Length: 70
Image: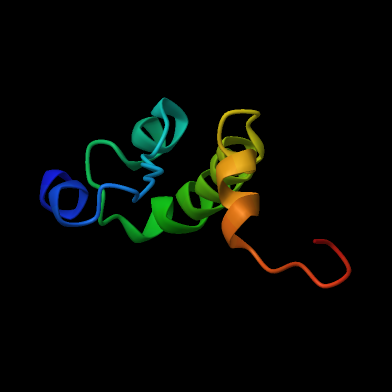
């Protein structure tokens, strides 16, 4: 991110990381096939909340082309 910021100072970043619920589901083996679907569904839920967050959505919406919205 530092290299990108140095080259393009106007760049905005959103960092998405798995939350503790996903980490709990995938421990001790993150490659477990038994944990894959539950972890994926939990990831989707977490990302939905993170992307809709009041600090995140305004940044995203500047860059998204949503039909009917300007």
